[in-house]
Image 1: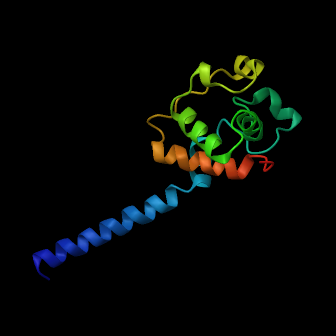
Image 2 (image 1 turned 90 degrees about the vertical axis):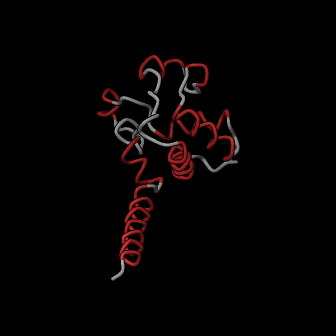
Length: 132
């Protein structure tokens, strides 16, 4: 095999590995489970979990997001930004939730902006009320 043919083969193998690992790792569900579910419950908390929660459950988060950002486009844009750049002035949860849980830490360095958008899309589709 010539040197160029060998380099081309290695390039194709590298592209395949990168592409398959990216497509597997960048689904919204996988990213949510890896990066968000440690803090945010996916279901309504049972009575015994209420005191151990470290963040509000996602259905509660989406309830507040949808009250302020009624369209999917607005909600996803807000969440994508908030995931990476949380700030008290942007917070939509009730004051008692912020007092209980604190402000969400930034996910910068843990998620890219593209991944934050993928997570926001997934979260919207999975947890939002469909009463638009």
